[in-house]
Image 1: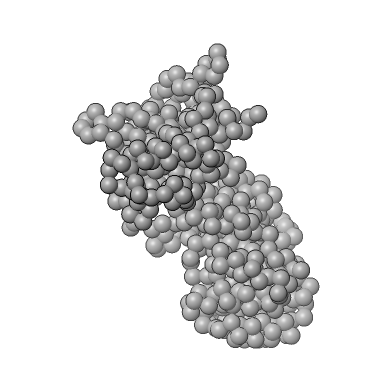
Image 2: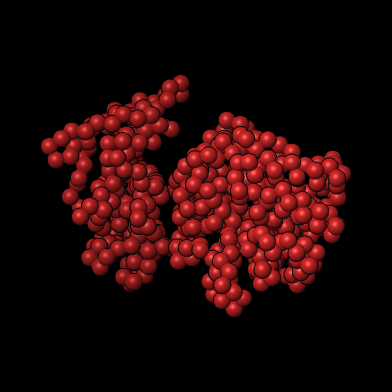
Length: 470
């Protein structure tokens, strides 16, 4: 049974996109989620802005524990800055992208075939000084001359490349045509059997998934896919086919398919276009979807089914408490939204003794200073203090709490809404933290948004700690 490598291109494809462009923090969070999915390789974009891009690569390299981090090096360029940014990664790969078709060579790179081949040789050899994992991606390979493809492949392998990827950028081939193309390549380049070769398929005709599976049936050792639809093979679809039918063509993958749906859902939150009014952390424009609105006529199973879709895993006792609280609210109004159900879970489920209680806090912010928060918590008979800077007063307060507790949990969702009207309106906040594969929520209520947020975050942290400690 051949264990195929799965390379995810989500972060690279969404770097600087027109419709969706992930922020620094969103790219980091998406990479961490992909790492939890155990994809073999996570692709990032090449260094263009030396400071910002290098910092992102360093941050991802430090955060990722399981996956290999892959970053392209410009053809003919110096791989040293990229290798330095990747130095803290457990495993990293340097990628060399070369044009396959004469159109790409002449009109994009303004080079002839001999010059491109020489640049491939020198760049691969330079990358090999920093890592044994070097990949050559041949762009527009399906429209390239056969002899040129053979020369590129031979040169890269001789220079030390360990992976060759054939890219079908046109995306106009049917699976049978793509399979025939790969058969010709294997006959023309027998050295491909000595290394890992893979494919990257465009989804121009909605055939990318089928073409990727066809490649696996012909011996591909790696495929490129994306957790979010970006005109390439779907990570979820391809892994589902491998899980269901892989044995029939001798292929398996190490991707955690059992948690695929949940992780893809979390990644989708970061990739929602701004036109929807939704951001990565769950703020909304005020319009709620009615898809999961519930009424007093819904059964307990239906209500808890929606709770599970929200990411919670409740025991029987907490399930009973949530349904009881839901019915009290549902009998007083026409319907209950998912946001309100979130608040019910935060309020009713898993109420635990507080390990940490809030004594006081100070937050400073402004348009000309970096936000700072000073938080004092009490645990048993001891007062603990934390001071932190952050991207806004709430972020600074959360980081100060992390400093005190010595624990970091992934922020899964953060919601704020007014529950009363006027200048003295009270704000309700819901904080959802992801820990050990489970979601924990906390609720805070105050006329001070920062205070409500701190209380909600602390409430969720106390729940996690209660379950983690014996």
